[in-house]
Image: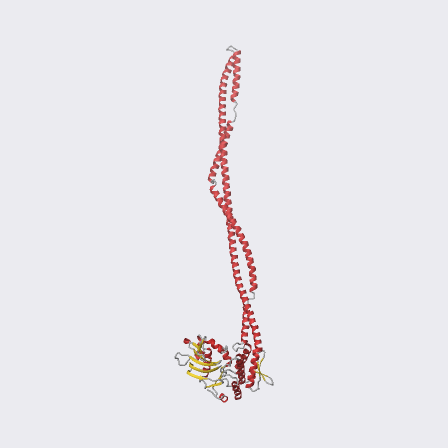
Length: 568
């Protein structure tokens, strides 16, 4: 591939500046701040574009650095390159508000789309990172010897292990190891044990809750039974005959009065039952008198006889005693009649007394039964209250156990999440370890193949530049770089700055040969020969002329012209 010409329409300090290039070596000379680095940046920008950064990063970025000095709203350029027998024209506007890129095949007279993909194919897959790390070498003057040595060490290590200088294998492995250690610290080691403990706690809480719920159900049934019994007892108490202390007192008084009346009747009956036998006696005497008088009268008919008068006296006594006996017998009849009447009344009083006593006893029993029911109701009510309290306590315990269960479940979910995170972290750790192992395997395979080829190609270039003084570049397994001499291996730290830069150049040339062996990409060097002595520079220029590549050298020195037929 050959870059034919550059047209910096509006780019940095340049406006409508055209630069023509040819195959072979092109030297672009200019003093400091003449714009050499601007032309170099223009080539890179035409091939890969220039993106403006955001925020604070936009200050001093490549977009801002190379904005046109004349602010007329244009930021663009053109470039022609030749490859595969065709000439292509690249037209690109970098302006953020009017960005465009066109790729035109001038040989066939057509525009290629999509342009960036077509250009990438023309460049053989060359990326911007590989561009700046292989075929394009920027100024190295600002780097110290130690920094340059470290850069060469990194470049050779990464190229030999990954085929790309943009991939820092050692740093990538270091970051992966740091990531692995960080992930290992995130693993909660006690989560599994704690999850098992919570699982056991959950089983115990479920058992306790099951027992408490059974007890709650039994207490509810007891409370329901007590409430039904209490309701039924209250209904019976409402419908039961009324028995009050006042009514009981009235019945008690009535029974007492009836008893007293019975006792009085018994005393009267007892008094009436006493038999007075005067009536029969009088009648008997009367009979005797009658017999005596009759005998006297009829036995002594003379009126003057004492017996006659005695008979008369007996007759008189007869009549007196007869009257008295009759009176006495009548009195006994009346007494007996009264006694019989008293007997009848006494029977009625006894029945009344028995009835009053029966009513009194019945009411006593009713009142006692009522009090018993009331007592039973009170006991049932107290039992109901106690059962309700026990039920409330059981429900509180159930709520507490359920809250504890929910807390355990929440902790379990958190630990389950932690275990999943642990599992995910372990999978990530295994993935990181697999990546490390794969990187080691791939790096080892690439080092054995590409790395070996890179060392051999770089060694050939180094031997030519140093005229055989250093004929071999050696990269050990620990990625330490040495150069070989007939006497010994010399570490980079023992070499001069100029020799390190020459090794750097040789490695880049070797990488370009191996990565783009089909298409010879142009080589672009920006003031990189400052530390070369004349002989090494002459050998380097001769090497570059023999590569059959287009070479563009930006320099502020004139000595490169001594080894090149012409310059720009």
